[in-house]
Figure (cartoon, rainbow, N blue to C red):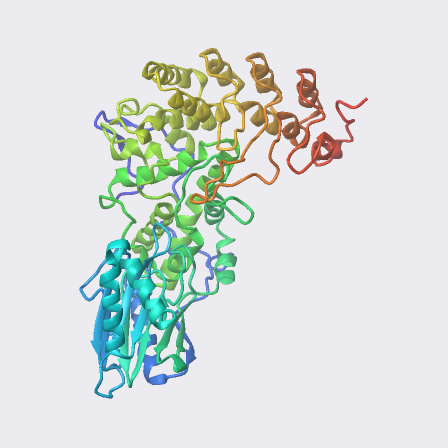
Length: 608
């Protein structure tokens, strides 16, 4: 893909305007100053940190070293153990299995083998277990007596009509043995091998979500029970604190982490955002030390087409359009992108002896990998991506396009109002409008698209869609009173909730200190005593939960953030000065947190 060339918008051949951000300077890698902070990234390769059985640990370490230097992600489920000294190998399921779908979730398999060499068969039974909707695991049972296993089978056959097949095996095997011999965590295939009368596995021992950083991988002995335990341990990734110290020198990575949700945030519900993907910290080891790991994008149906990168850009823009705070974080992301590409290219050129062109490509692959994983490659929460994936003609933008250029292209894309019908596509117009408002496009440019989109929503007669449309537009419009006036004049209800805990446009105006917007909203009938309410709104599958300080009003937001004039405006409009939040905090408590009032020595509004 030719960076710096003029990509066109669809078949109409409309050349985009100049970008807000200049392209990253990736052509001067040889002259780069690698002594600058963040350029000196300590080298890393897998390290053997436990070596209780050298004859096993040496080839185990070699297997991890081979995977470390190979393309793709590092994964214990895919490590090649054929070089291990072994007397027999067992694989459950026993057929080749690729991917991470339902290989073990509804699975049970038994293998008879003389494990201890006494001439009598033992029985290995592996039963799949679900651990959450996306996680797979398995339990291993070793029956040292074939007759005992046959008795379990007989009991199961009598019980099967009243039990699921998988749970039936688990219940009966647990009853026979008192519990599993070993358990496997998130694996699509459980693998064991036999050496000198003992069973070993490299499959992870316990449940772990796939977003977790696993620094240490273990080869463990699982049978006989009296000798079970870890035998070899390999550090396959640098310590988290080392990675995060390096990442702290990359504003782009810090913005991504904030978008995902930092410490203390509701991970999936920062601002009004929707679902995001994998914590970017999981990928840092690969980004810094394994450029070949990013050779393939995640779940992208085509290979490196301009429209694929456009979809990546638009997914991030979609997130930023959620509310004013989200837009501020998104701006940090855009500001950091050029330096990230240049910084990573410098690193790859110096550390991996790449040519400037190869280093540029590796840096671009790293960017794609991060964007695909933080914002799911096919996420239904990124409606603007539909303009690149499904638009007719597809929207194609320059990779280094700034936020204003992206928003302008999305707002005026020929396919914006003619995408194939779906909930995701219906959200694209409102998100494009919100992005255009945040990006500072003129009211005259925004107004016709807004009016056409709002008229379409009203004609459809879907009240829920109308609420979603209004709730998506209002947080952005609050920052632009001239646009807010257009939105309210078109009939948008000023009291429409904008997110899962019922934050209103007036609360945004109060929080941002926008007195002009507050006046417009009050004149349009905004309820000055509306309160946030996250009770019952929490959804454990997405990480959304109750607010720590719920039942907040616009006056509380203003008391904590705004100037005296806006606070007084709300009081004069009838705001309840005696209201308390769910922590019992009153107006005075919020006023005591307002730096503008405290530092400026202003008097306290609303006090006698």
